[in-house]
Image (cartoon, rainbow, N blue to C red; front, top):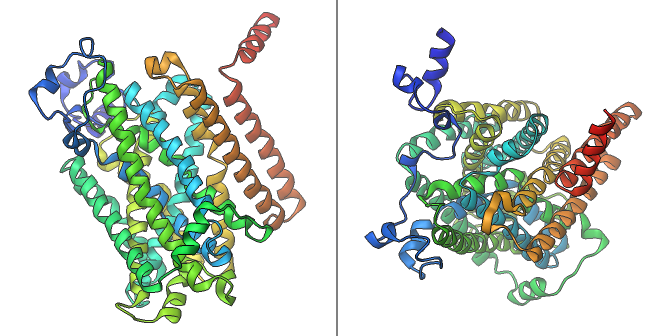
Length: 520
């Protein structure tokens, strides 16, 4: 009895006694947002009175409506601007100059396709990807997907927290050590909880300030260093790729698609009050979310372009090009450009801090949806945030205490974390495409055959790109016959699970299951 009381006290609105106990089972189903937390998108009484059957077409465009829907896409785009992406940008610029800008453009386009599908899924079904995976797959597969997604979250969060800690160390003049920066960054979950209590719009405004800080910081750097506009345009439209820049190219593509971000966006779009029983309202929501997501990704692309071109102008062809990373980029910039308007070292650190803080908080946000959706856990916000934060902060603190940012081992660790996130990509993209292609799930909003084919092509391409990264890491950094043999066994299981996810909804799988059932 005591354990039941404790469990009820940890649920949102827990401790309600008999009244709470009499609630229906659906009330205890995990949901992304409670109805009271959702933002109303109605701008007139006619919006509320409109009937989907009488008005099957989407209502006319409204700037006020677009403003009401604006927010989720900008939280989503932060994953395109995390410290891992910034490091990929600066290394691509230093090693390849302007040559990989075209790849950055098309990687962003591929990322946009994935995120638009994620938003469509969330709006059309009223559920986010983790919830739908729990309903679609058997328990063992659901738990495996949850474990893989949590691993990707931890890998991303370690890099993001370390990025923030590096920025804090720079801004403090070295007074705050790396582990101290990790502790400070860990406290961001309290900022998250504080803002979330004041409503979704306040939280979105906070992230807008952080994105604006990044945009301003890196735009100032762009203005001070004055990269070549001509080379920039050529780099965007003329594809170039050499054997010397393959590693940087893979890094650009691999950093763009973050597995946890696919789950996050499908949940964020449910922060608006949308009547999913009215087709016109769902069409309207998908339309506005598509616009605001594309606008957000244009902003993120601009920021990534600024970072890449600044380091292309300053370090392409230099001796430092092969050694540059997050930890020493600011110092290299300071030595190269000095103090024209304001110390460029601190401009870089401010942008990096905004990147790290925003991405770690959205990681906490994503972790709540992932845990709640896969495991159907409805816990109070503070408890979910603390659990999610602990998953990443504990290993990050270990990294901060035992590794120095200038230690070569840190580079190997970063590469291992990139691989860790890369191997999780199929476990986000395959369920996403499977679900948006099912009429039983999407209804009339199921994707068409052309979109489906393009999505599978993008998914296979991303899997091949990240497969290259995995193989490269295996060849160069994995030593010892026992370790290599063990990893080969893990790889076989990994590939078997991917094949299962792909063929599960095919007629081949159904015939195979029927055949096995008859034999048994």
